[in-house]
Image (tube, rainbow, N blue to C red; front, top):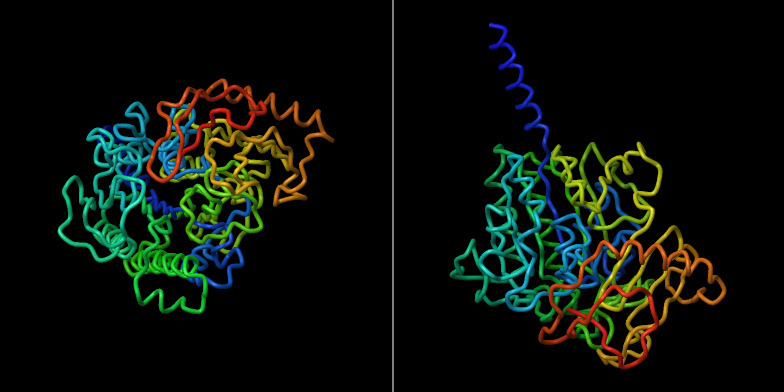
Amino acid sequence: MKAFILLCLASVTSFVAASAQPNILFIVGDDMGYADVGFHGCKDIPTPNLDALAASGARFTQGYVSGPYCSPTRAGLLTGRYQTRFGHEFNPGAGGGLPVSETTVANRLKAAGYATGLVGKWHLGDAPEMRPPQRGFDEFFGFLGGAHDYFSKNGILRGNENVAELDHTTDAFGREAAAFIEHHKGDSPWFLALTFNAVHTPMQATPERLKKMEAITDKTRRTYAAMMLAMDDAIGVVRAKLASTGQEENTLIAFISDNGGPTMNGVTVNGSINAPLRGSKRTTLEGGIRVPFIVSWPGKVKAGSVYEKPVIQLDLTATALAAAGVEAPANADGVDLLPFLSGEKTTQPHEALYWRFGQQNAIRLGDFKLVTYDTNVDTNAGDRSAGVTGPCLYNLQEDIGESKDLAASMPDKVTELKAKWDAWNHSNVAPLWGAKEKGEGEASGKSGKGMKRKKKGEAKAKAK
C-alpha cells in the first residue's frame, strides 16, 4: 500500500509539473529597422499588434543579437550559445549549416514532452541532416534558404514535401502558426518558432497593403511599410488564436529582429530606418546588432514594463528552458531573464556582451563599447574589401549614436576592454566556412586575432 501511495504521489507531482509548463513562442522578424515599430516611436508604419505585444509584457531598450546577419543570429538563438563557439560565424553556403553536434532548444524541449514546430525561414542548412525535422522540430512549414519570393510556392515545404499552393508567405506563415496553436490546444505544452522572412528582400507586398501605405512617397519605403504591415497582421492572427483557444495566459512569447535594418550600400537595402542608432545590418555598430526585443508572459512578466539593462537573444533560449523546467546546458552563454524581469535579481544579466564577425569585433561592458566596424558605414561605397576601422570606444549612455570616439582620450579603458574581448575570444573557434552568397558577402579569412587596425584592402570577412 505504501509503495502504491508513493507511486500515486509521484504521478501527481509529474502531472502538476507538466501542466505548469508554459507554451513557448519565439517570433523573429527579418532585417527590421530599429526605428520601425510603434513602441519605438515610428509614425509612418502602423504596428498595432506588435505594440500590443510590447504593452502586454516587457520591452527591452538594450536588446541585442549575437550577430549582424540572419543565419548566425538564428544559430545563436536555437542553441543559446555564441555561434562563434561552434564556427557558425557567417551565413552558410551549399552544404553548410548548423553543426549537427549542436543541440537545439527544440531538441531539449521535445525531450521534455513539448510538441515542437517551426514556421517560416530556416537558413540553418539545406542538407537532409540539417533540416528542421532532423533538428528537433516535429512540424515544419517554410523554406530552407535565406530569402524567398513572397508569392512563389516553389521551395515552400511542409515537412520535406513541396506545397501545392501559396498566396503570400507572410500571410501563410501567420495562418500556419495559428493552425499549429489550434491543433495543440489541450495537449502537451508546445514550442513554436515563427520566423518570418519579412521584411527581407525581395521587396514584394500585396496590393491592398500597398494601397494602405500610399501616403509614403518613397517607393522602397512604401513597399517596406506594406511588408511590415503584413507581418504585424500575421502576429495579430497568432495572438488572436492564442486568446480564442484559452492559451494566452500560459504562453511565453519572445520577439526579436534577427539583425538591424540594412541601410548601407552593399547589403539588401529595404527602406528600413535604424535611428537613433548608427550602422547597418552586417556591421557591429548598434544599428547592426541592437534590435526590437520583447518578452511577454501574462502573470509572470509585468505588462507595460521596460527593461533597460543590456540583454542578448541567447538569453531567450535560457529563459525558455527555465520556464519549461528544463536544465540549461553547462556551456550555455545566455541567462534566464525572468528573475531580472521580476526584480528578484537587480544586477546586470551579463558582465559583458561580445561580438565577432570576421574582422569586425565588439564588446559591451557597462556603458562602454569598444568596436571595430566596416568602413562602408562611413563611406557608403559598397566596397566589400574596404576593411575595418581601428578600435573605437563609445559611451553608449551618453552617445547612443556612436558619434564621439573616446579611444584616444581613454586608452586605459581601451586596453581593459581589448583584454576582456581577447580572453572571451579564446573560447571561440575558426569559422567553418566563409560567406559567398549572391548579392553580398565575402570569403572569410581567419578570425579572432584581436582588435587590431586593418589597412584598407586587407581581407575582411563578411556575410549576408
